[in-house]
Length: 149
Image (cartoon, rainbow, N blue to C red; front, side, top):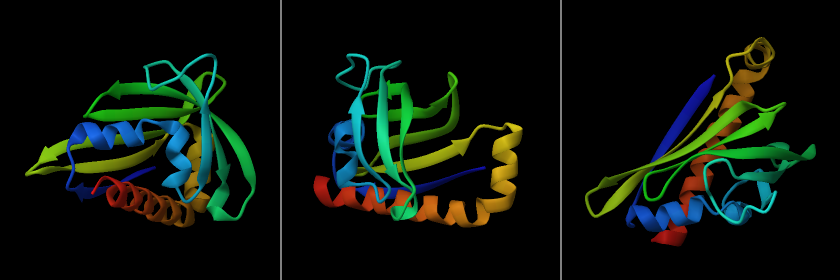
């Protein structure tokens, strides 16, 4: 109930982290989340900050808002957030950056919470949703790469 993709970017880790931790820019990169905004007075990627993302599932619909919380925020290294429901992360999205050569490797991943409803969902639709997530993660990272390079 998880997957990841990694893309090399010829850019310094801090520059990449600045782009992917600015949730208000997600619409420029993601094929599904077309906008996001900070909530509750937050203005940046601090641990515990809340934001919401506007998602168009599979690029077609349905369209809905998700509430999210920043779980890890380490400049130049990692940005992780949870898609929240009733105070718990149902899906955790993470971007990890590792220096490599003159640039860095950026890994985007998702992991569904190991709870029964998510296990059932994954058993029934994981084959399709997993492919969509993988393609979306690759598209997101390639779009960020195009901007930073």
